[in-house]
Length: 348
Ligand SMILES: [Zn+2]
Ligand SMILES: [Zn+2]
Picture 1 (cartoon, rainbow, N blue to C red):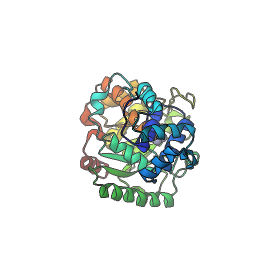
Picture 2: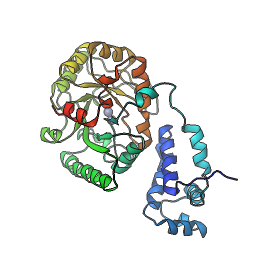
Picture 3: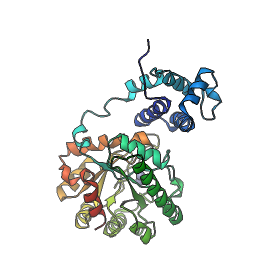
Picture 4: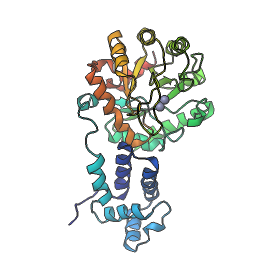
């Protein structure tokens, strides 16, 4: 006798995709489930049930053999085998510690959609953030110069701002529980320390993360100048993944950029810019010594997922574990703040 499941086929497919992403499985393994969920979503429940009953559900474009199995079980009110297996494999705590601090986070300041190099639409990121209990999520797609990540031109960013408003309108029409999708950017710090987006567009955003993505091997003196240039820019709120290192994962490893960390973090304190604790397991940025230096110098922090897929929004606990270990006061972590305090800080 199989276990009962009453979430329905779309929820089952979405949950499988979420767990695969959370478990850092390859994107291609996830795509089939997200595509099938999107294909089934607009269909009336009785139509899906009828197609399951007469064995034609695989005729729906986007539904294959394995996703049909999931849909069939869910329609019958039975726990899909694949889902049960993944709950066991990827559903548990990601790390032993950090849950206490994670529970104090109200939102996430760094996330990507399929408008740049993320894998899912904006609304799927927002829905998942709501499911994770966030009050806000800042959408921070890349800026124009990062062409490999399909960085947004000024025109595309302006259009995206309209989409963010539409998503918020839609969510509140569903009787939203106070969640807000905030307008943001992960803006490239150019070689001369300027920001890679038009200032009047940056001014229209709620939160801006500034990161170095190019010429990571620049000499320390120039890199320090470059980073401080961005920190001094009144638009900058968060310094993203400051060393750029990669410690593990499919993209291989990459050493830390060299810069005068004391000078950079002192500039962050002076200009009220938060140092990001980037939660991605392959980044773990800043490294512990720098995290402790920033702590001792009095920096603010932001614990961000840098999610490129909905399930990766759950990565924040990795950063929380590190912040807890470093003894960082939760009140110095800007995403423990309520939305109004965050927005006042980010737009002073
Ligand atoms: Zn980045
Ligand atoms: Zn990012």
